[in-house]
Image (tube, rainbow, N blue to C red; front, side, top):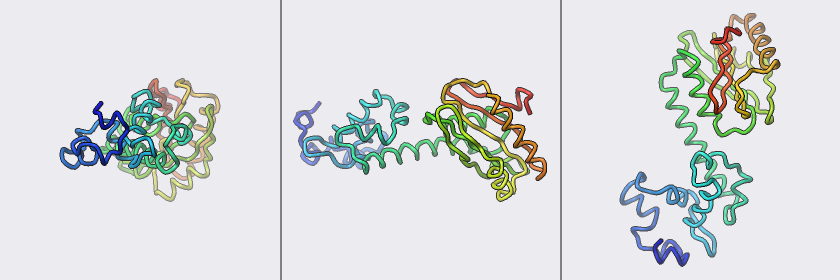
Length: 233
């Protein structure tokens, strides 16, 4: 640690080459450490702590692991001394943009050609959720994803998806096929009795509108379960 930093002197008093923003400007974003990138998001420190110090505290709270950082909530961030609501919102927004970018990359080939490609997309979207989230993918005649939407979010053990909401959106999107999806934060991939009943209920209702329920995919950190591949549709 450099002497200037050890004394918690303001960043403006550091050597120019050590300042995160100046380093980014001169050498590019890739050369910055995780701490320096976070410090740029945090922007300003407190009376006795620089933005770099606060960034170190945030990383410490996430065990120096960016995956764990993505799981921090607003409440978690606000527990860190010097991180107020505005700083927490900026960090959360940046993390969400990262997730959406990764999800968009997984959909660069938007033709659905199997459960594994859909599961990869879903795991990116849902990886940091500690509660159940129900998502529906809406497909056109070419089997391309026109739209996806979070239908509902529930608690640790379940969520409720309203078939009327799902089918209304399918008609609005002119979808000819839909894929039902949700996560199991517990890690288990076994579909519950409620999962099976809901799938059949939506499938039967969709038939009246000539809309096919192509699959229901459950994802967790353990992998994925496909109703279609298991012969349950």
